[in-house]
Amino acid sequence: MTATIADRIYLELSERIVTGQLPAGEKLRQDHIAREFDTSHVPVREALLRLEAHGLAYSQPRRGTRVSALDPAEIREVIEMRVALEVLALTHAFARLSDTDTKAADAARIACDEATDMASWERLNRQFHRTILSTCGMPRLLAAIDDLHIASARHLFANWKHQWRPRADKDHAAIVQAMLRRDAAAGCEILRRHLRRVR
Image 1 (cartoon, rainbow, N blue to C red):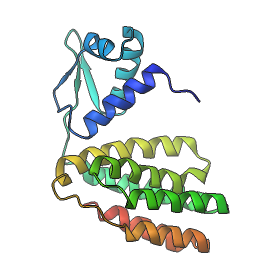
Image 2 (image 1 turned 120 degrees about the vertical axis):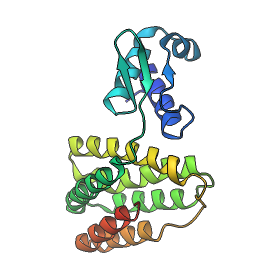
Image 3 (image 1 turned 90 degrees about the vertical axis):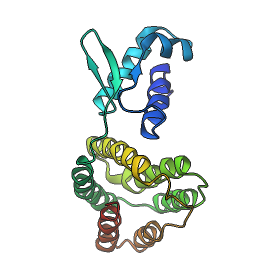
Image 4 (image 1 turned 120 degrees about the horizontal axis):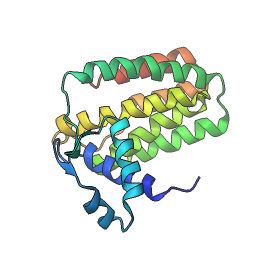
């Protein structure tokens, strides 16, 4: 599927919000964004609506759209939801695993381990989680998980940016090993433990 200009604007702005380049309260001016992306206001409005739908922005009548604030209290809820939904997705994914899927998971794990900066690592970490869950065949569940990944990413950048160091993720490696063995119980338990470590 070809990315539209609205997709491009949404992805770029969401990346800036997640990484903190656009701070909470910052006004997202349609005319400035349209100029930057050399487009009309229509795709800009579509991208801003998507940011709102994902909890990254909010709009006020006659005052425009702004970057939403990060609520430190929400991280516990986000983690508990990720544990419940990602373990559910992984359970269903295991039932449909192919050799191609396990190879894709291992490639995503290696790419994540080789990241040299936090922005790349966070994007590749999200990609690893998407890859291990994607075969579950439940698009609504995966869309809900994507939203939770965005919320998690904002908290990581806000609280962990100065402590991040390149490293090999042993949990990711163990999940891939469980996938190779088709050991759903072990894979789900490792994932549960892995997600709770974020706290």
